[in-house]
Structures are given as C-alpha cells and as structure tokens.
Length: 237
Image (cartoon, rainbow, N blue to C red; front, top):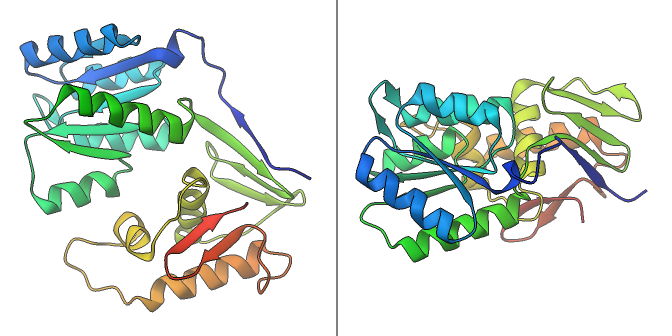
C-alpha cells in the first residue's frame, strides 16, 4: 500500500496567507508589502495574542519575532505547533545560539537574523512551504501506520501503539520531516533538553530501537524509520 497523507481543508486564500507577527510597525508594513508583491496574502499583527488569533483564522506560514509586547514568540510558536503543522519562521535581531536552540525546540522551521535581505527571506519562505506542503498535516497514513496528530494517537493495523511521550515526539519529528534526513543532533536539540543538560548520544539510539520494536513489522529491516548511514534517519521511502 502506498503512503498518503490527509490534510486539514484550507481555502485557496488561506494556502497563500502569511501572518507576520512583528511589533515594529514600519518593518511589519514592509514585510507585508514584500509578501503581497510576491503573490501572498499578508496579514500583519504585533502581539502573541493577535498572532494566535490570526493563526486560528488559517495561515500557510507565520513569520514571528521573538520580542513581542505581551510575551515572546517562543510561546506563540509552541502553541501553533501544538495545534497543527503550520510552519513558523523566526525573524529576529537575536543572534544568540541559545535563542536559536529555543526556537527549534519550540518547533520552528527556520531562523533568520536581522538585518536580513528581503529577497533571501522570500526564498526561505518558498523553501519552507515547498518542504512542508504549505498546509497543516492533521493525520498521516503510511502502509499500516496511522497517526492522528490532534489526539497524539498512533495506530498500527488499526490497533493503538502504546508509545512513550519521547517515542511519540520522535516519530512525529521524523514524519513531519519525512522528505529530509533528521540527524541525531536535531533529535537531541528538538526533543531532549539541549540547554545545558548532558544527554548521552546513546539515548537517541535506545529510543529509536524501542520505537522500531513497537511499530516495525521487522525492526531489523525497517519500512518506516530508515537509517541513512553516516547522516541520520528518515521516514519511509
């Protein structure tokens, strides 16, 4: 059986909508104008609260600053990722490595530092939308595996697979990045605590091994979680 995915229904308008969450009014207007000129429908907001409301109305992608009047963009990104697969690009003046790590831990798809080139930003947006499909992945089917992201449930041949939280998050990370190789470092940064805590490299191997035993018909000849030798792992074909 070939793999396929089911996506939340989005209008053609929402598939082109980019939400800009930036409290610098002049920059916000400039970004919206650039996106509009490039064929997108741009909506500019300036706070976490407004960003979350705009996300709920439907968006193909969000461009988010970190420092906002009512909180940090990290919180907005986390809420967006918990609710679906809308991609998030951080656009911020913060170039500290720990801020970048926090952003990716929250589920960011990309991170750009100000000052930036508008042309380069537009290329990053195109690349992220091309990689993610530009819409929210709510359910996913591949072979005998079914994932309901909203309920965080995994079914194998119709029966629920009892995964630990780390195993589920690891599987979701691989599925959402199924067209890319996911390295061990990416797994450590996005799943385990990468902010000062020491995590043994073997932790990833153990979790992957346990996950394979729970979902693979033959863990030694996996059809879901494939090893890309010397690089990392990828999902499916």
